[in-house]
Image 1 (cartoon, rainbow, N blue to C red):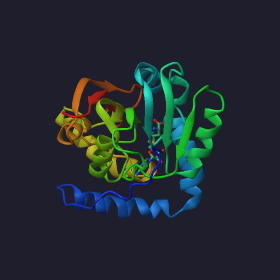
Image 2 (cartoon, helix red, strand yellow):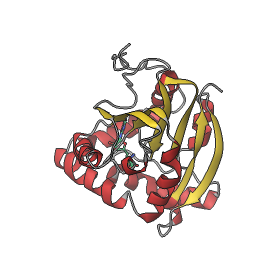
Image 3 (cartoon, helix red, strand yellow):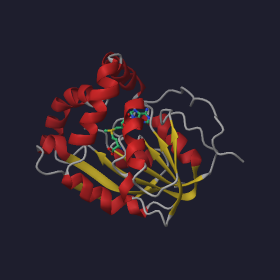
Length: 240
Ligand SMILES: C[S@@+](CC[C@H](N)C(=O)[O-])C[C@H]1O[C@@H](n2cnc3c(N)ncnc32)[C@H](O)[C@@H]1O
């Protein structure tokens, strides 16, 4: 069966953060309505600021764990592509709604020996069959995506039982003092990086969505200020 069958948009059921998400979406749309920013400046910003050495080191530790049929959500400018192991990955679905990002990622893809299929849809509308994917990779996308609840539901649906999410995300710090600064900076990051959140508790949100987070590490991206730099990385198993 063709795994690229469009299955339609996710439902719009109620959940606790829905109101905040709607407000954040309206804020993001203001910037998204400036095509030069969305299509040119933001992709360049992500591929430069979004990929310094400490982040590359974390990518190098995480991405090679991907195996089989892989879905990367928000592939961006393709910063993870060099780290996939072509011996382990049979097919990579590279989902990215931003055309400027896809252009940069396509250039990167030509330099790596991977079979990549680009999907130009948002992560809330995964056009893949149920239980068709072995690994989902998300780096700095679960902390960006507008409707995380819908996206996680879709990820759970497309993952095979026991399939894994590999994640590296900005995330709420445990220290209340840092969290307070994260909340203060968040509106600026949110505008500059097309909806980025600093304060989502990604492991907890994965757990609430029915995944089992494993080997979660809390890391700080030096040399950035603490309130910009708290990440969590790890694995979450589907079907918890
Ligand atoms: C901070 S960038 C990270 C890019 C890349 N994953 C990386 O690690 O460099 C966030 C990415 O998520 C993408 N994105 C934003 N909203 C999305 C959505 N609803 N579904 C999928 N991707 C989305 C953006 O276009 C952008 O490429």
